[in-house]
Every structure is written in structure tokens, then in C-alpha cells.
Length: 222
Image (cartoon, rainbow, N blue to C red):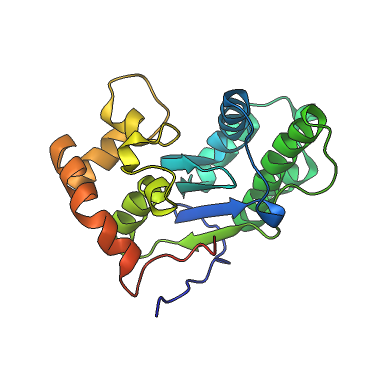
């Protein structure tokens, strides 16, 4: 039997997390390419200043990100670079050491979800919550968990039988990591972790089924 992980970990400086969320009632999260592009654009806008991204995947009714929270110093440096009148109350509290990284990141993720949901609802004449609450975050504590998370996230479309081979799925960071195009992803760090581009490919193809079928596989309740 698969062990269900604790998806309620608190965010902290330099912590690495697998962040996952899905829609209510398995509704579609994306109805067009423009929806997906807007989702990634809003993620960059709301979350990139606070974290680095190793990989991601967008599926019809859910998403996965593997991220590392930036240091307090980097976050404060970013917030101090903004006009003071544009800062949210939580951001001012963070600068004054009156709010934790967990509280700040929790609200920044929610701002991201709300921005996408409002636009999605308006475009598709929909009302009500789009995402399940609370959203899930799994802390990555071991080296083996990091490898597992990267492969699990990239292979997710094949796991859900959306394609015969996960490399055919367009909406994941797999393609960006293997390309030479400019990216905000921590591409070099990921490739170095796997021992280079070819080892990155080979390890994904040899280990993807293992991580979905053994008793430590990440369970996402789909």
C-alpha cells in the first residue's frame, strides 16, 4: 500500500517543497493554451520573487511545482526594492520581522491562485472557488526525495494516461530543461544533480515507473 505523505509542511528559508493543487470536483483548470500561458505568467509574477523553481507540470485539473524558498535576506531585498505604497500589509510585517516566511509564502501562493481564478472565472462565465483548499506542499528532506519529485512531476501526464510517453506532454518543464532557451528555471542545478543531460534523460526513463508503483510513491489523490 502506498504511503500518503504529509502535504501540510510549513514554508521556511531555503526549504525545498513539492507544491500541488487541483480544482474542485475535478473541473478543468485550463481550457486553452492561453489559460496555461496566463497561469505560468501569473506564477512568475506572484511567486518568482520569493522562490526558485526546479520543475513543473500542468495537467488538465491540477498542477505540480518543485520549488526552493529564497532566503530571508533575498526576500527582504526584493521587497525593499518596491515602492512602499505598493507593499501588502503582510509584506510590511515581514520586513519588520513581524511575520514568518510561512505566513508570507502562504499568502503569496493564495494571491497567485486568486489572480488566476478571477481571470478564469470571468473568461468562462464561472462562479465560485476554482481550487481546492488548502493547497498542498510536501517538504523535500532527502536527496532521494528530490530525485523522486523531479521524475514524478515530469512523468505525471503518462501516469494519468494523458499520453503514452511523458516526453510527449507539452506542458511540463521537461522540454525547457533539455533546451538551450533562456529560462527562469534552475536548469543547470537540475542537470548537474542528475549528472548531465543524458543521465537526466536516462534516469527519468528508467525510474519513472518505479516511483509510481512502489510503496513510497507520492500520492496525489487524483
